[in-house]
Amino acid sequence: MKFRPRRSVLYMPGSNARALEKARSLPADGFIFDLEDAVAPDMKSEARDLVASAVRGGGFGKRELVIRVNGLETEWADDDIKAAVEAAPNAILVPKVETAETVREVSARMSELGAAPNIRLWAMMEAPLSILNAGEIAAAGAGKDSRLACFVMGTNDLAKETGAAITADRLPMLSWLTTCVAAARAYRLKILDGVYNNFRDMEGFVAECEHGRSLGMDGKTLIHPTQIEECNGIFAPSPGEVAFARKIITAFAQPENKDKGAITIDGRMVERLHAQIARHTVTIADAITELHA
Image 1 (cartoon, helix red, strand yellow):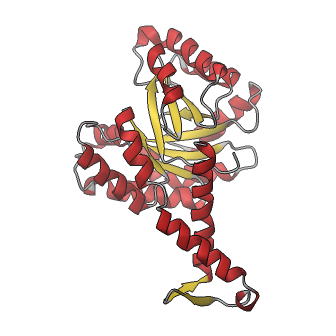
Image 2 (tube, helix red, strand yellow):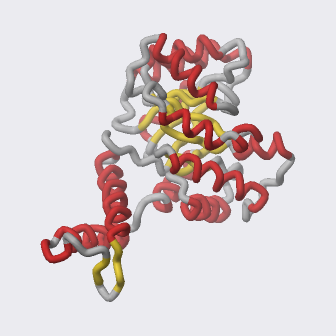
Image 3 (spheres, helix red, strand yellow):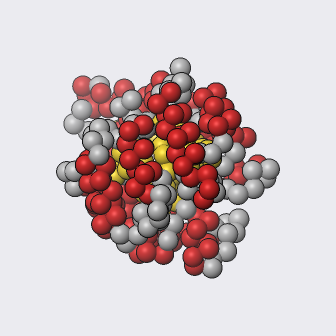
């Protein structure tokens, strides 16, 4: 797909064969097959084989498949990256990315292993240095040989590392979230919000999804299938937004408007920058339709 919606990206434990199979029938936009936090040390090798087999086996349609490897400092990282490259997912997610050098190192390693150019690199932003170096990390994605495509917020680890509270309004983490959004956008990366831990609290989950969208997040990482539907709805443009976006595009395409910086549509002043936003809105809507057709 030329453009991928990433409204809902569900973590799936790599050691759970039943969960990996179930993913094929779930309406998430993407899946993170986890070899790290969700897998016990004595199950790492088995999980690696299960995930690689699942990715190679296909059956996920056009949904995005991502493998989260173990941290580069661990004994499992090299084997994880090698197996992931051979399985050829859409992306490899690296935990605890703290410096731009990590991005360059993993990108180079993937290329050495023969990874296709379209296998991207995602970075977990989940440590104090991740936040302090967010701009430099994002800038590493601008290099010719870089594979970096997406930031994934690791709010639970940020809370653990800093002692910050996880609150309903997310004020303790607000500056970290917005810093990463700004860094991602400066270098044309995508960014996904962190997980909401209580999957039975749908009201709280919806509020956090709406907050994430208001901050500019592309979507949210999830821990349970019951969160998918609400998340998809919140991070998708509404039918009204799509209809008005198409009206803006059509209006600016008229010969009499081609040189105008602003026009009036339905009593509202619309500037040419809104036409750019409108095209993005329509691109998202069309990609969602294509993904789940």
